Image (cartoon, rainbow, N blue to C red; front, side, top):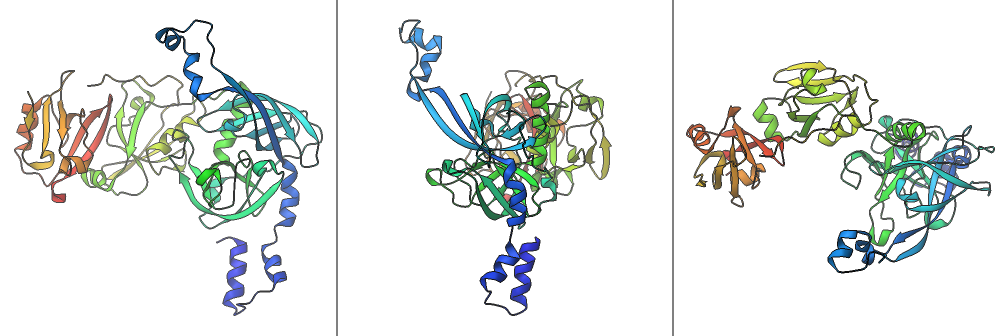
Length: 451
C-alpha cells in the first residue's frame, strides 16, 4: 500500500473517523512533488490537414479508375487543430516525449512550457504501435522529468496524471493504479498498459503519470468513456516501454523490432492440464520457425515461456512486446518450463521478418473430443481440415474453428482423416490437438468431461 493510503488508514484505525481538513491535506499533500514535476510537463498544440473520411477512397488510384473518375480527382481535405501534452526527457537537447496520435498528420507542432514560453517543435520520430513519439524544441532552460520503472508499481498505489485536458493548460489529477499489464486497448499487443482511475480527458494524451515520489512511471495514452469523457478508466504506456522506444527514435527516427522466430499463445487451464504443467503466468510456444534463432537456441513447440530477459510473461502478447523491445543481436534469457523441468535458452534477437509458413471426403465425428465436427482431408498438405464445428460441442468449447487443420492428436501425427479416426478410436477423457490456423501452429485442449 502506498504511503498516502497507509497514512489515511492509520488515522481511521486510531479512531479518528472525523478527519479535519488540515489533517487530510497534510497526509495527502503532493504539492512539493508537483512543484518539481510540473515544469517538465508541456502542452502541445497541433495543426494539420487530413482527408475527409467520406472521400478517403479517392486517394486510391484503383478506386478512381473503378468509379470512372478522372486521374486528377482528389479527395477533400480539411484543416484541424488539436491539443495534447508531452514530457521533457532531455533538457540538454530539447527532446520531448508524447503520443504518436497527438502529432499524427501534423504540419505544425507548438510546445508551450509551464512558464508560458512557446516554441515551434520538429518531429524526431514516431511509433504508432506503442503510441510513442518524440519531438524537439530549442534547449532553452528546460526542466527534464525523472523517469522510473512501472515494474515497481502495485495495484492501489497512488499516482498523479499531469497534462493539458481540453486545452485548459496544466492540470493535475490524483487516483490509484487500477490494474497493470492491460492489453487489447488499441496498440497491437505491444503496450502492457497501466490502468488508472486518475481523471484523464482529451488533451491529457502524452502527459505524465507520476508516482508519489515524483517519478514518471508512464505516459498517458488512452481513455475509455462515453463521448470521450473520463469515467475513471485511463491507460498509460509504461515508462520502460517509453524509454526503449524513445531511445531508438532519437537515434534512428524509427523503431526496428526484434524477433526470435516463435509463435506463442496464451496458456489456458486446459492446455496446462494437457501438458501436465502448472498454469500460472506464461505463454505456450505453438510454433518454432526452422532455422530461426529460437530453433538454434533449442526452443521447442510445447515449451512454456515464463520470463524473458528477467521480466515475467503473463501471456502471448507479452512475449511479442518484450522481444520486440530488445536490442538487435542481444541474447536475452528465456526461462522455460518443459514438461517437469525448468530450462534456460538464449536466442539471438534478429530483425529478419518472420516468414509466414504455408497455410494448410467430409466425415462427421460422432464421439470423443471432436464430437459433432465435420472433417475433411486437407487440400494443401498433410492433416485433417475442420469443415464445420457444431455450436456447443466439445470441439467448439475447446476453441476449434472451421478451416483449422489438425496435424496431430495427442502428439501423434495426423496426415489425413483416416489416420485421425484411427487415433480417435481410443477412449479419450481429454485430448491435446495440434492445429494449423492461418498458417500457424497452435495447441487446443479438448475435454470430453465438459459435455
